[in-house]
Image 1 (tube, helix red, strand yellow):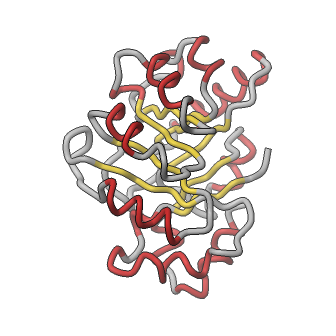
Image 2 (tube, helix red, strand yellow):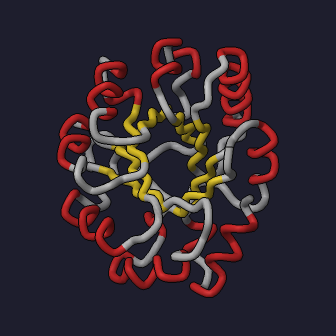
Length: 217
């Protein structure tokens, strides 16, 4: 698997998103991570469907939508024509993850499921693991950027990597929260192959974005 880095625009300058994305346009194996929060599933509120549509029209990199919303079915339907590379919903936001995966796969080439820090890997059934393309391990409580990495996340990543190998599956393991050059190497070695980073990248100067992305590989 490629070592993907997914800069999260949660930490960028929302008033000038196009300019913020410009330094990243030539980055290989780079996704743009969209943290979509509704103020209900998580306390924070970010951007809605019209903004995501506009981003999809000006961004040349693959878009990775992370739904932190109470009604993922609605968002999955409304964004189906945006050309998203991946869409991820939360395990905790649905009573029937298999049905939601099936719905999403009708229009998205990659579908992910996310688990909060207090949700165990064992909550994901073998049936879900076989159908999913990506599993997002939240290494902070979802809802706000700039939080510190939760160390217990390493054991979840290792457990998922062990399951992936034993079942002969190829879902990506994505990690979101508190990712920086201080823990990226350990995360890769533990089994993560897709790292989301927001503050680490976008709190720097624009001319450093590409270099910071490479430091996570």
